[in-house]
Length: 233
Image (tube, rainbow, N blue to C red):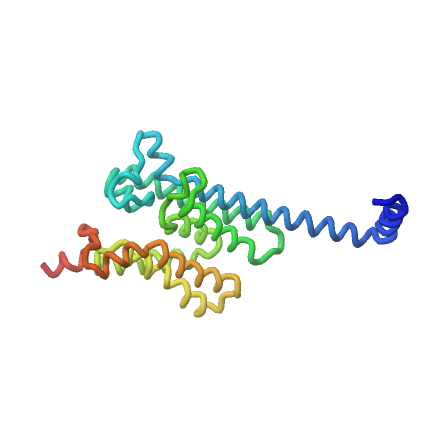
């Protein structure tokens, strides 16, 4: 840059200190948002079943359905391993949402964007070759912080469908779908409604193999949960 142009630029900065300060604040705010979103994704990438599996010398993706989630953990490794998996997955989702609320300032959409980043990290974990779970456990974690009522509705819906059908995947899909009418019924803000719609669609996507097996009639049931059928027997 020529000397005269440099002098002119410096003078303009001196004459407009407020503009420069505003630009600096905007830059810092943008960096904070990006940092929180990245942190949420990295937290989501800490897969409970894969981390605990390393301690046991087991890659859960090589067993059962090949999914790194709580259901496959229960079926292949037992309830203690599954409980640890769920605690890690729910906990990391809750932490990601809390960090966004605590340090996100007045950006209304940021906690929900961070929640989505955490769920995305769980499904596509950078630390585990982008092969993770299906997002339900981490979703429960973020909702515990951002929308506790939704957790009660989801768990209730999930249990009802599971007891009636025995299909875990179908139960999860329908439980996630309940977020949309719940957001509409409670007159939620646009951020929460958009998050509900995105989550419902994403759960359908991550459970597409379950839906394919349902159509083919080969989806395994969780028979121990089919209480209604037992009652009729």
